[in-house]
Length: 144
Image (cartoon, rainbow, N blue to C red; front, side, top):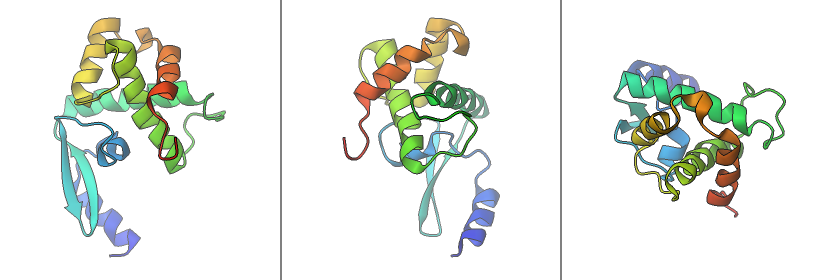
C-alpha cells in the first residue's frame, strides 16, 4: 500500500488518533483508552474516549512546549524528528510519573494525566521544569 492510500485509509478508520501513539507503539507506556489496530501492514493506535483524547492533546502540547529548550527548538510547533518526539512522549510521560509518584512506570496514560490534574489543579500548575529534568533521568532512548 502506498503512503497516500495508507493515509486515506487511516483517516477513514481512525476517528481519534492516539496523541501518544509513538510511545504506546514502542511499548514504553500503556493506556486503558488506547486501542491498537492494523492498517495494511502497519500498526496504529486510536483513543476510545473523547475526553481523554482532549486531555492528552493538551498534555502533549505542554510537554512539547516544555521540551523546546532541551531539544534546541525555538518554536514548539515544529515537526520533530522521530527520536526527539520519542523523548517528548516517552521521556515526558515517564518524567511526569516520576515527579508525581516517585516511579517512572506509566501503565495508564489516561490515569496519569487525571492524577496530575488532581494533584496540581490544572496543566499550568504542573512543575514542567522538574518533569523535563526527570525525563532525562527516566528515558535514555534506544542508545542510552
